Image (cartoon, rainbow, N blue to C red; front, top):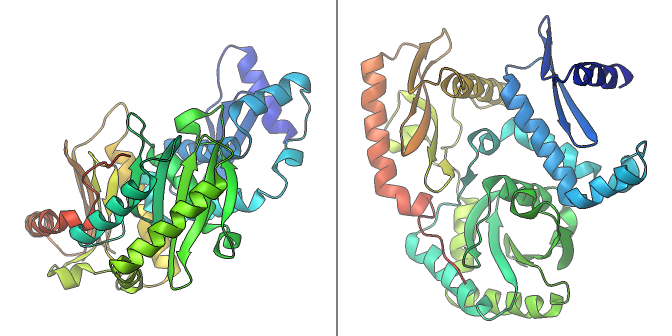
Length: 376
């Protein structure tokens, strides 16, 4: 720790900023955020910019617990303050976030995955929330999640939520078993929305027989019972209209694979819709049916992503063949696509296969994505 701090100070003394050190197969990546220095030490395939992104998420996770203004104030008063004292009890959030980033492409893509639902069903769920919560003053966001996927998001007019803030909310829900036991009232700072203030979140699972989690976020600290009542009404209406059944059915269904779509030569794909900042990916299939192979595949996607987004020389299309798989990545104004094929697939076959995939996504887009942005 002392050496890392000395390195940062030494470089800062020359009016410069240390970004990374490369030693053999190990990368040391630094970011300095106000009083905090964050360092990642990595032997993985991730690029410097991808490790910077991970460190930024860790920093934002700390802000979500403390806010920027509290962090600044603490260090203005005492420069040698031990931050662990303020973060006691929240270590699990940071641990979980780091594991989450390793296996979840959402962070790399800067996008959220939606729970596949029939458009009429999703619309019915959204309208139920709008009608029940529309008159509640100071309610900024209503977010319904299941299996780390978004079912719907309703927002106050003029306000938007950044995917990075949604990822922190997903991390909070996924790492907190206690939310399943009872309704909770928890402060949370969303750094991309307002890094200096807390919002108050009413967090609860819909029902014993439907494990979707509803978060109602407000700037008013005294409306717990109002939101609790609204939540009960939402659940009653959703039960009457069979929406809970539809959510359960989608949650329990195994993800469709590319073979089932009719693309046997395509093993896996990540598709990001840029306009909605949402992505879709199918279920993993052989040979990516164990943790080690899935990690390796995500590592390959990270390499492709980095090569497409290198600031001084970004690419639009990249085709590469290795002895284990053939990969094609493509960025357009509307989408980003990362595809994995059998090793012997030719470029022509890969492009034909992608054409079929895009047709299928177009046909299913209302089920796979949330295309409108509903407001209270």
